[in-house]
Every structure is written in structure tokens, then in C-alpha cells.
Length: 289
Image (cartoon, rainbow, N blue to C red; front, side):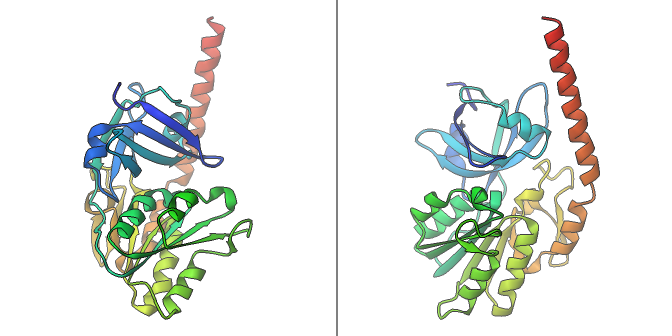
């Protein structure tokens, strides 16, 4: 089989896709929390980091879940079963520290539920009591719930609009767990930066350790661009080489989120320009037929 062939594709919601990709060396070596760099084709060489959502070493496959938000992820979403990626490079990043600590709460929001899956499963396999709290703006944005229910001791679902599960945000049941007779010994949180920030502030008064994954702010995945730098405990860290996981109580979320919003107008203009060029190219190709 050709390397990096797409074995399966599934659309999880309007802009979220799941792909199973043939990458046997990565599947054999990967550990929970790690990511890969992928390139869609040889002509457009941008490489983007995607966290490994699952792997099957026997099949030689890894599972990637991504949201269509820009030019490269749009091109990726257009590939079908049988197509092949140009590059799958990894595994990269520091693996999650997996150990038996007692009771663990894994909190995932939106697309962040995907990279949470292998971590949650590994923590359960290590003998921990596992509670998974999954959140999304609406029901269609809550992904991988059935999979997590297959191994977690408890799954709590929250939606902002109340269309499924509890109405509200993930910090509500997290606070309840911290105030219960059996509070978590560890919290893992992966999702939008604002969600992770408020998960941190929720557990801070209870002295519960919390680990956050900042994979969503990575750019080139090699540490060369500096785009994923973040202040952790007063020191500058790079998410792709020093993380992607950090002690949430030490992360400067306000500084990180301010910097993340700096280039939104340029990103929008780039996406609009790229779409215009693609339309022109398609029209030219049709005219020349």
C-alpha cells in the first residue's frame, strides 16, 4: 500500500473531519499526547501539525481529526479514501505522562476531544477512575462520545445551547467534582484556550493539579517559527518542542490569547485570496477543455 493512503474518512460535524491514514512507522512508535506534521500535496508544501487521535499498530494506521478553518485544512477535507497525503512526519512532541494517580477528570471541548481520547484511554488502562467531561456549543459539535463511554467510568456532556446533555459549560461539572467527597487527583484539559483557562481557574482554589495541552496554537511544529511560544511560570516555552502539555496553573493564558488574535485579519485575507486563486484556476481549466 502506498504510504499515507487515506483508509477511511468520516465527517463528524459541519467542519470537522476524521481520517484514518496508513502510516505504520508512526502507528508503532506514537504515544498519547504526540502529534504529526502532515502535508496535503507536493505542489502546496505547507505542513501543519495534527495531534494523533488514535492509532492501530496492527493495521499500521493513525487517526487524525481536524477542523476545516483555513486553506490547508480545506484542501485536506477534500481528499477521499484512496488518496494519499504527501507527508506524514512524526511522532513529535513530548508524550503525556501516564501513571496511576487515583481519580482523573479529562475535560475536552469541541475539536479538543479528539487528542484527549488516547490520553484518557491510557489513563484508564493505567488503573485510574476516569471521568470524561465533554463540551460543545451544540450537540453536533460533541464528538467521540460513544468511544469514550466504552472505557470511561463516567461521561458528562455539556452543550452551551442545551441541545444535548447538560446546558452550560464544562467548568460547571468540573467544579462539582472538585467540591465532592471524591475530588479528582488530576485534571487533563484540552480545548479552546478560553475553555482551558477557565478550567484552570476552576480547580485553582481546590489545589487540584491540572495539565493543559496547547496543541491548537502550534504552527510549524518544529520550534523554528516561534509562533507557539508561551509564558509558563515566567519562562518562555515553545509548545511544539517543550510540550504540547504544561502545568495549567503556570500558563499565562491572557498573554497567549492576546497574541493569538494578532493576525486574524491577515489570516482572513490570505484565505479569501487563496480561494479566489483556486476559482480562477478552475475557471481557466474549464475554458481550456
